[in-house]
Length: 50
Image (cartoon, rainbow, N blue to C red):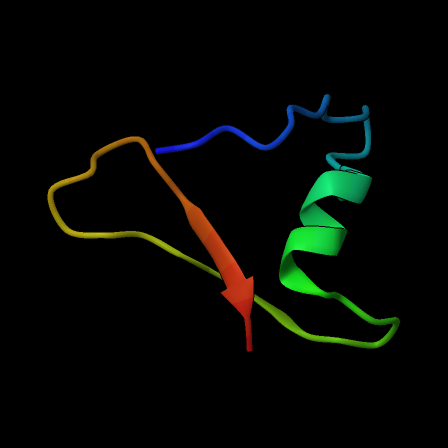
């Protein structure tokens, strides 16, 4: 596992996707992201482009 960046959660439970992650995923405005878990990786959530 490689850590690209870390973020803080605001009081409204919002985060900003760091530039390193946006570039790595080649994100564009309006793109949909999917958050998912992997069986056996308790306590982890992954993210990918939809």
